[in-house]
Length: 364
Image (cartoon, rainbow, N blue to C red; front, top):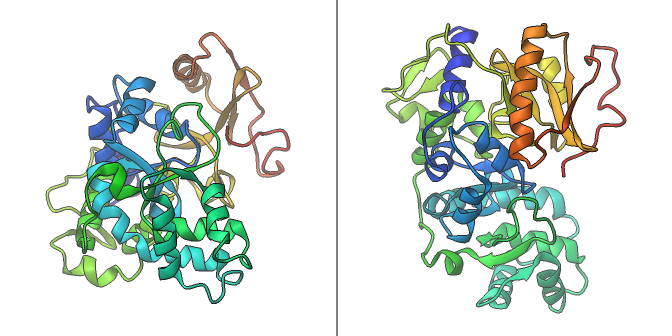
């Protein structure tokens, strides 16, 4: 499969070739999970993909317990459909414990994680606690361990969700913990098949290699699993047998993707959506900058701050493309409640430009 066909197929499955008529809940299900370290990016990610979307729709799904916010893929915050959380969270147990060990293993040496889970569950039964509140209670049992490590460790070994208003539009603050089974009123699946995760990933992100699926999910040793599945092969790429590739000549409109958008981190090899040089500027440490797509690939980054939409292209853009970005940017500003705000262009970031720009703010 040539790179352009792969690009258009990916954009089609990501609902980025044309805005979809799916409902927000259907879109969340299709995309498996929306990266949600910050409250606003999932809203913008859905706005870029759906024909008609309002803030109230996603907020209503969170309050209605149809969508939940929790640590999931790669031990990072995501929004996912409640019915998917029940099988997805058990599959993420090993990656989350591995991530916890890497971050806090040294300072929690000797900590019995099963005992920690039991004690944390007891404290959380019937109530919601912020991470600092839970850590304070856990410190009564383990006073020699720093509280930050206790709070994060509890989050890694217990299925916890972060209940609204946390994670809704423009709502920040301490992360609340609630036992997932209490919030959802249902138990998690005991042994969900990993093949389900592979199938759902390919439906939204495929075609993809084994390494791509592992990079997105945080799981390992998937080669034997995928080789045993009835998947179509395009060289090293795997795909669903009934999922046709997109027409490579399909036009790709400009699109704005938010901070941490899953498309930017869903592959080991990301050249289908951005060059290696662009990747070095978009994915910087734990930060994934908001991007705009031009002809289906990353053309630069954007941000809203100081009352304006700021656009920083990676290369010079034709006037026609700049006009399309300004039109789409005006729609983005209206969605964020800043209708009529100015749009500011920055000089394109050539190879000699220091990175990240010294005056470029972080997410918020």
